[in-house]
Structure formats: structure tokens, C-alpha cells
Image 1 (cartoon, rainbow, N blue to C red):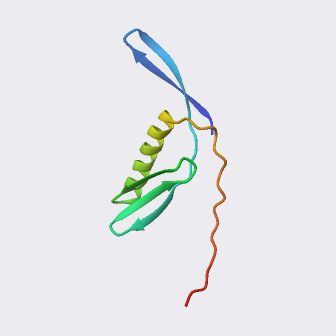
Image 2: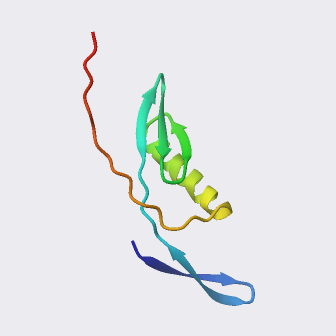
Image 3: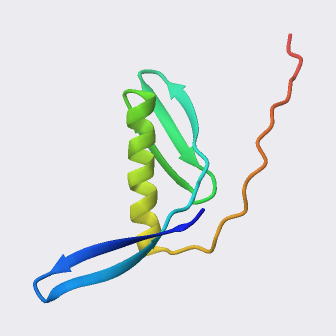
Length: 87
């Protein structure tokens, strides 16, 4: 994770905007005809007709959410699997 710098031009001239690139987790599952994407760190959820579309929509939703509700650097979740026995 690092910081990228963006040079933006306004009518008054160029300004430097500091943006932080952060990595989040996406958990994607299929519900009927749609893919649902969930970001557990931010609590955002979105959907799409394809995995790529669901992920792009989740990224956009998370960016908008973080603009309104900035958060400190999230702790990385532990992702694992487990088995259950069913009849």
C-alpha cells in the first residue's frame, strides 16, 4: 500500500492532490442471476451480472462510501475455510 500523487488542473492552475491507494477484500457469491460482492472491511455491498461487473460496482460503492466516511487503515481479515457434515 502506498500513496500516489495526482496532478489536477483547475481554472486557477495545477494543484497536487494526495491520494492513498488501499487494498480491501471482496467476497463474491452468486444469488440467482446476479453476483453479489461484499467488502467486509468497509461494510459495502454491490452486485452485477458478471463477477467483473460486481467487483467494479463494489469498488465504486466503496470509494463513494470512504469519501463520506473516512476510515483508518483496516486490519486485514483472516480468510479461511471449514467443513461441516450434513445428512
